[in-house]
Image (cartoon, rainbow, N blue to C red; front, side, top):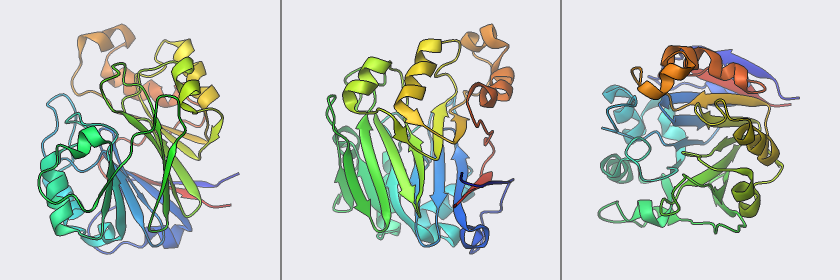
Length: 272
């Protein structure tokens, strides 16, 4: 059983060696659906390099975003950057271009639909698009293993990727904007996959036992971190007591649920 240590609101400035000190991999919330995973010598970011985004979803502070783009402080370890799909609350082509220019040691991995939005030199961009019938596509970026599956966004024309990122033997699964069922996941090859941490949109499985069952058949996780909370109090959330209530109760809906919602709020997933 992996050990888990929750560390609240870690500072993101300076050269932080929290991963070595904690003998594990740091998972830090950037904003909305964006997360940073830091191992001893390398790190990855998913859906977290965004300058503008969408009005209804949070974005990171400009100070934090600039540190990520420039590879400053703890972000000097960044080797892999990826985005689940092209929607502006997950991907920003201008921020991507800046990171490519200012941090040439970082490899971007994107679906072709997403990569096509980036202007200029794309030599540091790898493209992947697993088929609807699988199998997954696997890449090794530095010492980071990343596996991709096709996960439905609810609309087939959107190239939404589910990513399993493994750093120092600790794995994290991010499904993007998952709107799907068991039949689709099984066909894509997402069946009984072991992961340490699942990052799951807070709406998936909300009052929908079929979706929750599909998730548990696809993935075996130790820790679940609900994410992608909408700002304000949209009409659809009122049925569930509003967004504040959804934020409060979402971790309880998942086995091993943990709340990680503030900017650079971090936890350490320890090793055996």
